[in-house]
Length: 193
Image 1 (cartoon, rainbow, N blue to C red):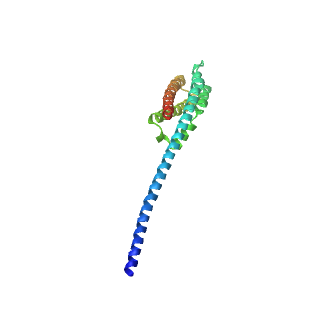
Image 2: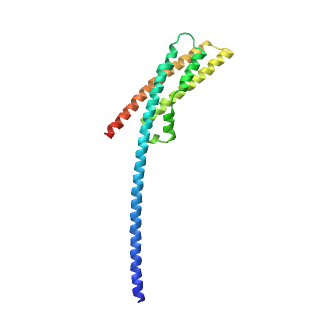
Image 3: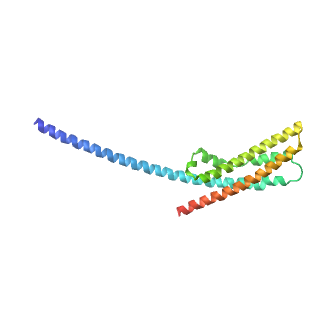
């Protein structure tokens, strides 16, 4: 009878081991499937967020280009020598450049979801706007220094001309970048269709 009991228990043990093994494998398969689905959904969500932020950056850049073209660049057509008020006006415009959407894109660490070309255009455009802002700040400080301690009048005109040239360069670059971003957005729309 002991042998029969051991044999019965062995069969029960073997069935339990097989059941646990199959159950574990099935549970692992289901967990892996769910994880893959979750990862796929997260990637799709990040792609949508990235596309939305690229669209918002496009609007920001368009607004910044408009400010450059319609507010900053016309300052250079004013007659007379550059005055401190010109520099302060330029600084107010340069400091008003929008960058919230771009900062959102950077802070959410989603740049890996966009093509390197688009990332490059956004990055260079915003860097150039920041550079223009810095250039105006330095020129204003230099202008004030020149007024206090004297100096060459050429400095004022030179810095004014440099800002003018760089403003036009930035405007052209943003225009080019916007065209490239538009192409990307159009390409993405065509993929969805």
